[in-house]
Length: 204
Image 1: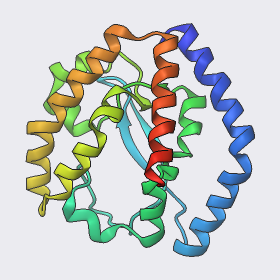
Image 2: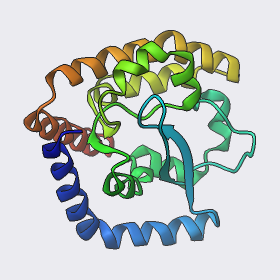
Image 3: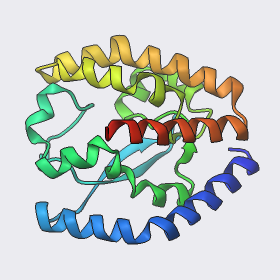
């Protein structure tokens, strides 16, 4: 991560914590009231081929101690009614401001992968994770909806894993490397504003 990108992240994360603080506190109260504890879901993700961190989100699913792999159609029944509302506007990702402040994430970059996929595709993620993972990015904007539709059709963990490995991993990596090659502060601004625009369009 360049010093310009780190300053960009620290400035806007701090600003958003101040602006969104009351909303985040309200969401914490709503999650507690409608779902009970735990309020947060902390998942292991990779920020480099060898370094992991805990990715923070508001909990949107019922608890399963054996949960693993990416979320496909076989996990849809575990999404709570309130969790579905949080996911629809990506409000469940607000706690990731903490990850940005800590330096685990950037605002813009490849989505942080699960350890199992980094270990299974070391060459792919060895290149992709030369960029600090982000909350949003080119692959998120261009491929996220299509990925959701693909995985939603999967009815078993095996089918979800096969679809993710065969289609999602290479397509997202291709987009992540395009971002990596063209990354600038102006490009980061553009992708952030595209993400915000997409969120407003979801609410229509």
